[in-house]
Figure 1: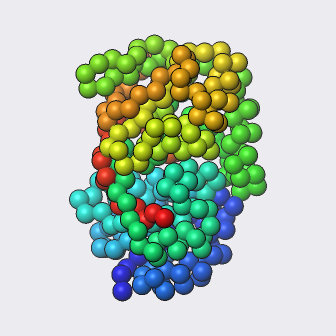
Figure 2: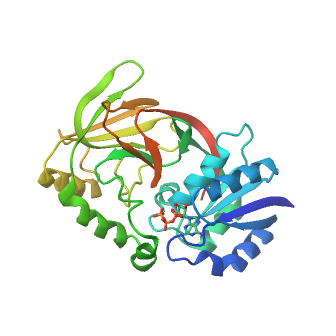
Length: 296
Ligand SMILES: Nc1ncnc2c1ncn2[C@@H]1O[C@H](COP(=O)(O)OP(=O)(O)OP(=O)(O)O)[C@@H](O)[C@H]1O
């Protein structure tokens, strides 16, 4: 039998995964996987366990949780020379990455996808010494994801992010950033937010980066230039339908390399897949087809 390591976050989303473990193990067993489980206990635990799982030679690693859990597992695997295939059981609040892959938020159906065995190579973003699988960003509202209390997410689900977003809107302010590709400066000015996305599905929006493709070897850069609150809200509303990309206040660009810096004395935090990911400056590169994922 093949050996699978299931790394699950009992606190993700509505906290259902622990109760469903017997079903998960049964489904994986019938697909030929001898599976052992690891429950994460807090920050970076999933990264450390994924590192151990790679070292112990598991054939497959399965991440059960939200985007933050997948991010941590990817960070434990992506730097290794031999990387097992990765399965996803979406149990989080937004599950942006799972939606981008077309994996449904159903434990049974997502396990059946792993059981069916179809795999696809997807790009990974490397940013300084870390990795992201879905999104890296900085500026207005990007700190929202780690400011929403876990209990509020358990209670309200995705709505918890919107409630927090509304609360933070009045305090929006621009940041000064210089963004460069390998051969030119894209901008050096005050902006509201920059997002470097691997998939089209970000922050609950399914068309935020409409041209993004997980396997094209590229990352999509989205920048909202310095605008007032009214224009920011208008752009966010257009983004629901993917109609924001032609707006003159928006820069949308595909590349495999981005360097971002901020002026001395100005701290710009990075959000990686919803988790705190250090501060600028950063160099961000696409690693084409770096991980193999189970897909529908
Ligand atoms: N046992 C635990 N108790 C509390 N927090 C945990 C535990 N294990 C891991 N964590 C933390 O949970 C966070 C990741 O949560 P995750 O993203 O999986 O769920 P979510 O926030 O509900 O979903 P999403 O990111 O899709 O909105 C990480 O910051 C991690 O450090």
